[in-house]
Image 1: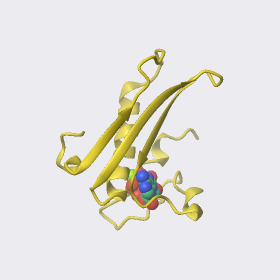
Image 2: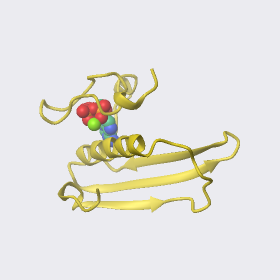
Image 3: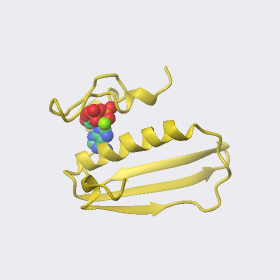
Image 4: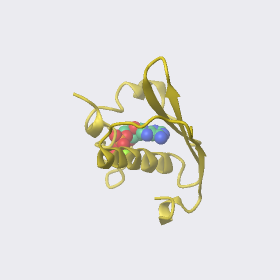
Length: 107
Ligand SMILES: Nc1ncnc2c1ncn2[C@@H]1O[C@H](COP(=O)(O)OP(=O)(O)O)[C@@H](O)[C@H]1O
Ligand SMILES: [Mg+2]
């Protein structure tokens, strides 16, 4: 995605743990999840800023964690409870559907 026009003014910082164990996951679903999150980040930064992608092995939790952050405007506290709701969007019509974050959460 980094080669696409949307990302031309975005710096991508990779802070990836090289020693991660193998993870059983659905590759195409994870591609969609990450794509949604990256587009959200770019939109929140008005297409200019830094996306940081960090991965680490949480040994106590026996899981791999991926943290993605951006230098955009953030999410107001009162909206945090709603971002995973289907159709919740703060974007103008044509910009967002509210189906990005909700589409991959377990019901
Ligand atoms: N990186 C982010 N920075 C700020 N707000 C965000 C970010 N990611 C998501 N949001 C908020 O969560 C809402 C829901 O996101 P999403 O489900 O992807 O729907 P959409 O992108 O279509 O609006 C967005 O409209 C936005 O208000
Ligand atoms: Mg989205």
